[in-house]
Length: 177
Ligand code: RTP
Ligand code: MG
Image (cartoon, rainbow, N blue to C red; front, side, top):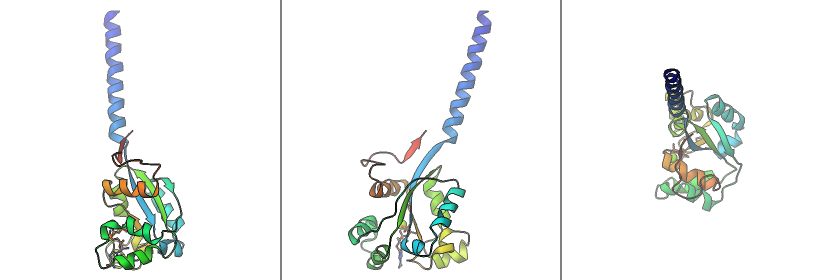
């Protein structure tokens, strides 16, 4: 009898260990910030882009339509403030509404960057014809969509548009569910 309950305990323990490793291996999710830029909205690509996002396995956790003012755009793209294209970028990003979105899936940052394609939409059309920028971008500036380029950038950019989502600087963007 004692032998039987020990065996049962061993079996139950094995099942629970197996289950928990499966859970941790398969569900580590990451968030990134995606944005449909003014040219994407103007060209009526919003629904198509969202469909591609969902079909590619991302969840859209948050989205909002906003009109950036000069100050907002300068802060969002602060890392480019010294570049010669900065004034033109700010003009473009404030030329109409944008739709920032928080996307979630495993490897969201890199996968979203891969899905949007190279910065220059003309190059994207040649080298990555299936990419979103190939579909709806025009050139190096008017490239239709934005994507965070690292988990650290994603944390900053998500809290920029959705401060209630990641309050504070130190909340990890990687979540282990
Ligand atoms: P994003 O940040 O918007 O996802 O774009 P990205 O990483 O592919 O490219 P990045 O170097 O971060 O540049 C930010 C945005 O600035 C505009 N740009 N214009 N005229 C130019 O030479 C030039 N270079 C970049 C683009 O709108 C680019 O997405
Ligand atoms: Mg960038």
